[in-house]
Length: 354
Image 1 (cartoon, one colour):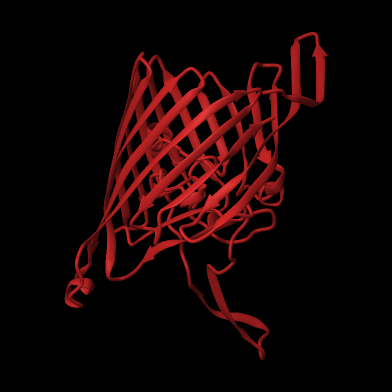
Image 2: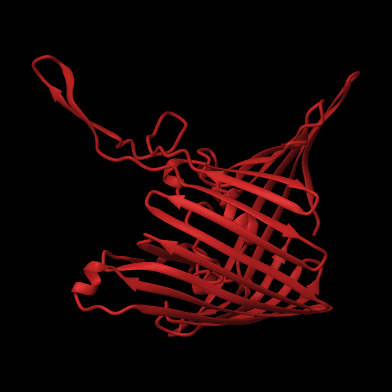
């Protein structure tokens, strides 16, 4: 992948050297998505700005943002910035949770890398990676010593809009008294809890194991996962156990490249109980074949039991293949069958890295 150096600044001082640079890269794709009823053309092009620097004392800092997310990056809900040094790396913005950083997801498939099926290869972690962004940027800390990495992440628990922050500005509601000209009967009408997560993993030569815990209000999550590599084969497994988790949603890109989020379960009748999945990848020279299986176990609440509803399980199967054409181009295709979707879906096309 070629990188275009957009701007470079170097400050040379007697005490040392401080340098910063901005590089522009990009991704693109063109192909066809089959949504179970129709085949549609699909294409996308994105520019990515990556900024890095180092202070005189050796502190590294930087960040990245896609051009199409620049407005949200201005408020910290897209892209991310970081500082790193001897005591670890601190990142803020649209970052993953500590659990996801420690464990990861199942293998991506297809030329849209899972987007054609609503990214069902991604485990529905309770916080981070796009969740809790009504509270503004999330924060993620990582510290690695030898083969062990420790992670901690959190939101700030506030959805108030305050100048350069995001939010709904609906935490406090008051009544205006026209006689005195004062605000009276002020009350808190919404209060967001700090969503937080802890995680750790151990990485050896040919395997990695991770453990994570997250909490968002009354909802809790415990996750365990691992990945092992044998010659050209990689096997992964993830297990997540939830309590008081009353919603789950998936989103992906439609044929025009716009983000959609219409695969959602939110109900007083059901709660997400468990998610577990298996992944398999085979790589031989320019060819990669990957697949995954996932099950989401949804259980009825007391209200659902009283209404005569039954527990439900949602199974998902996906398989895909890639062929590296060289120079940053990859021919890819995938197919997914899921109980979350009405039809079997597929895609095929070419991905580019610039």
